Structure formats: structure tokens, C-alpha cells
Amino acid sequence: MMITIFSFITAVMLCSILTVSIYFFRNNRILVRWFGVMSIVLLYAVCLVRMLFPFEFSFTSVVVTPAVFNDLYSIITNGQIRFMSISLNTVQIFLALWAIVSFTILLYFAIFYIKYLKSFKKIAKYKSKDDYTNQIFETVIGRSKRKINVSIMYSPEITMPMGVGVFRHYILLPDREYGDDELFYTLLHEYTHFLNRDLLVKMLIHIYCCVFWWNPTVYLLRKDLEQTLEIKCDLTITKTLNKEEKVIYLQTIASAVKKAIEIDLVKYQAKVVSQLAGNKSAVMERFEIIAIEEPKYRVTIKSAIFYMFFISVFTLSYTIVLQPKGNPPQSEIIEEDGDFELTPQNTYILETKDGRYILKTPDGRFDEISEYSKNMMVESGFEIKKE
Image (cartoon, rainbow, N blue to C red; front, top):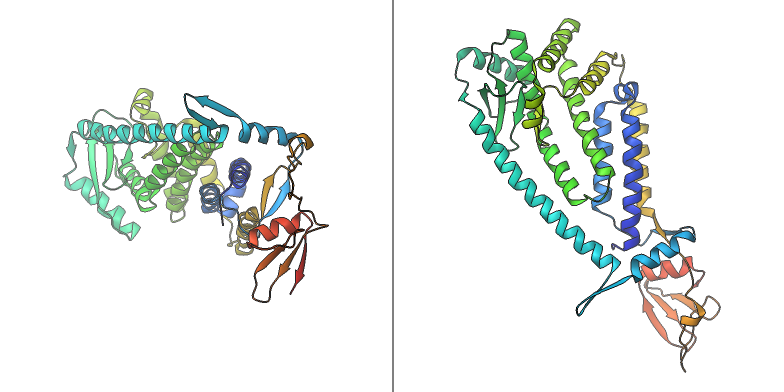
């Protein structure tokens, strides 16, 4: 098991293709309702894992790329830049730039997040202690059948209800009058986000984007996953509601959009906050998915096939690595006395009884090689003989 430039490039290409494919799949409302939004979340998780672990194994086979990529590979690996007494190739420069920019973005995000939490303490004028709000919230907890510590706070400076805090949970509400149903479903929505750990997922995704800032598809993944989490929250709530209750829940979201002031949304919006409603197009998509009738029966067979397909794709992605193939120019080959070229015609691999691999060279030497080297040589046409 090892990480090479080829296994890394392969992982980037495969994850980018898979991310775009999942995005188009997720935009089909019927398929989302049919297979469940959790399927989308898991598929995006597959992309994250594959990108974070770009390993190449002994069973990995080389897929030769078209010859046009040979020149690109030569530029990447052979390009040299000298600075004073330091000489760096293209790969080293990229790694250094990657590390510096990632560290800078992560540091900025950490500072921003700390200031962001402090800003909420300033705009939250008081903590809810009235019996009315607490009674409604107790009903929410009782319906959820799981209790976590959440503080409810009011602020006159915001117009959109939101959940804040990955470790300490706060529900921040605009300071105005609420009807019983409106307050209940507002609190239920934000509380469900905390139960699902959606804010933690958002933070991890944002950190992932800070690290892989140079890959444009990670921003598509972040944007779509945020909407997916909202849909997941909606479906978690509405699956226990009757038609009349669904209408009230949707009216609560629509009311939040109507009462929201655009400048407030921009001022207090962040990647680690859950909001009851976002822009109109995103809300309309949520409404459409909720309105689609859930299948009368669980499509366990189709879901199983669906999961097996993507698990297979994930597993098979480790069986190949994209790599250019080419022979060095004859003019660059330096021959001296005693030098020789290893070819399938003059060299073979001896497999011993105890499972070792010995390379028999033209000069009569026997050198032990690794299983990985054996696999690479077999792919190049070298013969294996058993002891």
C-alpha cells in the first residue's frame, strides 16, 4: 500500500467525476424520494473517503493513458525552478503551495468561526426563560424521543431562525410573536439538525474544502450537500406528519422566507449554521420533494442494488491507476561496460516455495523483489517460473 503521484491523480479524477454524477442524480426529485436522501449523503461520503485515501495497492492494475498525457507528465515531474541554492520540481512546488494556502485558509476559517460565535453572543439579547417557549420546546423533545442540551435565545437583530454551535448548541430566534404551530415547527426543524449532527457535517465539509481548495468540484459538493442536509431534515420531520401537519410545516418555512430581510441573511450566514429557510429556489426544491408521495413500500431490493453498485465502484476504483507509458529517448540512455537492459527475453521471475519472488538477471544474479515489483514486471510481460 502506497501513495504515488499517479494514485493521487487517479483519485482526484475519479472523485471529481463521481461528485458531478451524484450532483445530477440528486437534482432528480423523484429519484431522491425513491432511494432516499440518505443515499446521496452516503455517496458524497464515498467521494470524501476516496479523495482522502488515494492509495495504490499490490492488486492495482496500471491503465495506460493516451500518449498526449506523456508530455504533461514530463512537465509535472521534470520541470525545475531554482531559487538561490534551492531547486524544486513542479510537484514539490505544488505541494508547498498546497500546504501554505491550506494552512492560511484553515487559520482564517478558525478565526472567522470564533468571531462568528462571539457575534451571536452580542446579538442574542436574552435567553428564553418564559414558560411558553420552554413548554413548546419540551413538546419538541418529547416528540423526538432523544434529548440533547440546546439553549434557545432571542434577538431583535435577525429575521431568520437558525441553529448555531457544533459543540454547544443554540437556537437563535427573531424577537417577535409566534403562533403555537409556527414556534413548534421552527424549534423542531432546528432541533432535528442538531440530532442529525448536520452542523458538524457542515464544518467537516468546510474543512475538507479548505484542504482541497484547488479542486473546483469540492465547492459543488459543499453547496449541494448543504441543500441535501436541509432536505434530509425536512423528510425526517415530515415522515411522521399527516397532510394537514405537513401544510403547517411548509407554511412555517414559507413564512420565514417572507419575513427574512436579505441583508440579515448575508450578514449572519455561515457554513456552520443551519437556517430554517434559504433562497427561494432552494426552498421551492424542498417543497417539491416533500410534496412527492413516498413509495407505499420500501424499495429494499432497489436500494440494495443501488448501494452495492456504488460500493463496487468505490472498491473497483482502487483496482486501477492511470499512468503514462513511454520509453526514454535512445539518446538519453547511457551504456557502460557491464550495463545491460532487463527484458522479458533475458530476465524472468522465480517464485519460491515460501512465497518469495526472485529476479533472475542476465548476469546470473538472483535479487529478491517485492510483490508490487513482481506485479509491475508481470504487466510488462516478464515471465514467472515456480521453484
